[in-house]
Length: 100
Image 1 (spheres, rainbow, N blue to C red):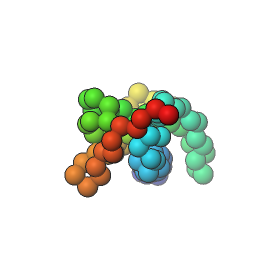
Image 2 (image 1 turned 90 degrees about the horizontal axis):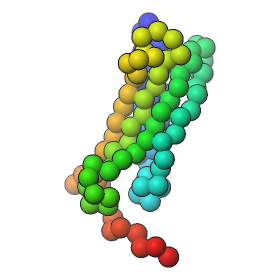
Image 3 (image 1 turned 180 degrees about the vertical axis):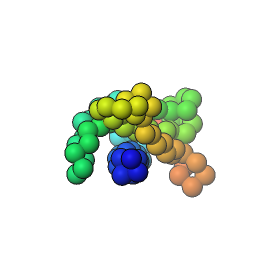
Image 4 (image 1 turned 135 degrees about the vertical axis):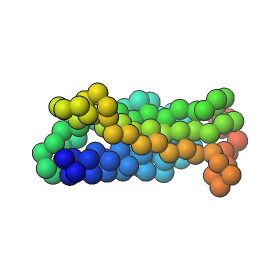
């Protein structure tokens, strides 16, 4: 069981870290995505990821979220999840991009 927990947490942590590293414009345009992952131990997960503004676009924090749902067992209903926020004092929100 411990290996499965470590796998699930690692999957969502890596997904969130990858998303949090995107440019602001890419995060603003990011649409919900669902991936299917099979781990080295043969476990399968459905990984859902999305980004959302905490209020008005380009004025509030932007959150990125990933959830990993196991193919079977109780984690089908209670996924592993992780979240990161962008837009704090150390990561200032740039001005809203102007359309070209």
